[in-house]
Image 1 (cartoon, helix red, strand yellow):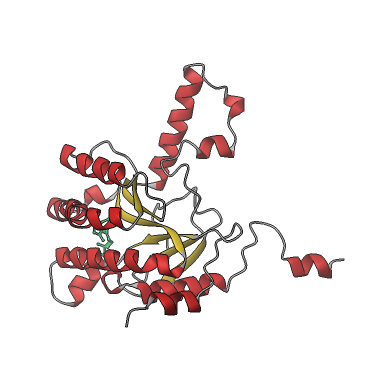
Image 2: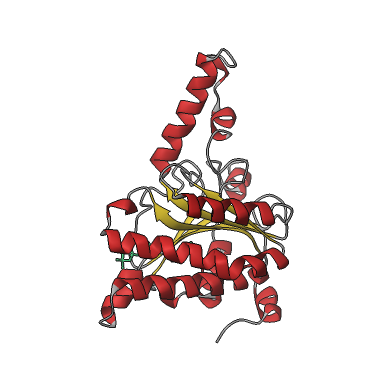
Length: 259
Ligand code: FPP
């Protein structure tokens, strides 16, 4: 059963950390291969079903109080998978935008691709550029797709960009602080995720948004990604809302108790 918008907004208090801002949810969409294997199907079928799950999740997210959704589509490490599987995933990425871009554009979704653009074929780059350009003025919902993305690679690239500024005399090493560094990441200027969800029964970050996850709440859901949808997202957000985020500070009750 999928959630109606009304039911979702009644059930949830869609609040981000900063005074009523919409939530930023990031998802590691894991388990496509195992989903397919369980059914005696080639892995590609799992990835195809994964795209359908992504579509359902994007469509349901806004009604659940999410303003920004970042998904891990393809990592810098995924190139080492068998060539056939890599081609299948790249093909699915192209097909997703070919079929859904119009709907995303009309629905007020701003699309952004994060990660390294080097190594991407010219046709994929053209699709990525088109998706970003056509949705650039949209503000209702942000969909960030991490593609050819690795957290460490992104941090190394950011360091190199800042080092270049120093080399060229546009900055001094002593100018570097967290804010200035963060501005060099491929995720800038988007806010950090409030909640990171990983599906697929594993409990690790796998090089996803390493800098940005510093204070994110982590939720692991034991469902393979192709079976995911708005009901699972709703469960994760309810769990998120039951947590106390302290950002390194002490709880208000503890401050009062300490006098
Ligand atoms: C993880 O499952 C999934 C991926 C590495 C790829 C995710 C890709 C898609 C959902 C399709 C294309 C993306 C977009 C953005 C349209 P896995 O293969 O690691 O599964 P396993 O751990 O069960 O083997």
